[in-house]
Length: 136
Length: 134
Image (cartoon, rainbow over all chains, first blue to last red; front, side, top):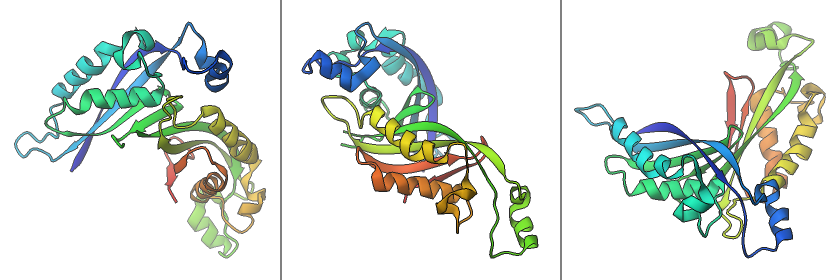
């Protein structure tokens, strides 16, 4: 079994707000991230897939194919977007780094056929990142 | 859904690697430049990984402010700008980055209640890093 990781970057804005909370509660729980006008990050995405190395090609997965899937499923939807307003998953869910990583996993898992998705790592900043392994 | 959250923090400290049970020659051979009697320092990066269910109301594994406050008061205030050899946990133990990594893990394991501790990764320089997961 070999693990292969591909990186991508996207920039997006978001805000943290739970409509069931009072304004005070929202500010207390989410702090500056509750600014109603939103704020942005340069996200770095690392997608790790695993599989056996194909005897003929020497590949775990065709990198070009993986890159295309990541672009189509993730970057086209999230790059230079306001996540709360423009990405369907975040109409009713807060676009925290945790939830974005889960959404990316769900977008990719069914589209990958050659190799199996192992981990989605999403950096919100160089000092903060979330790993999701598809665990319930 | 269970997710892992990692956060990185910086602190600077000095240490000297020297084992009382070894002869001077043995210390010199084992620790090389790190055995310099006056000590030397590093900019450490500590990467803490915690895990848990993503809370449906907040979308979070744990509040970053809770993690930051704990690390600030229990780790950074304890080790930042200190000579590690002077601290009680290193009175009998050599303050290698391995041992420091274990100490940090154990402080978190004992006191951090907001999420499950997965591992501590400690970078001594850009070239060296150590991980402890219990």
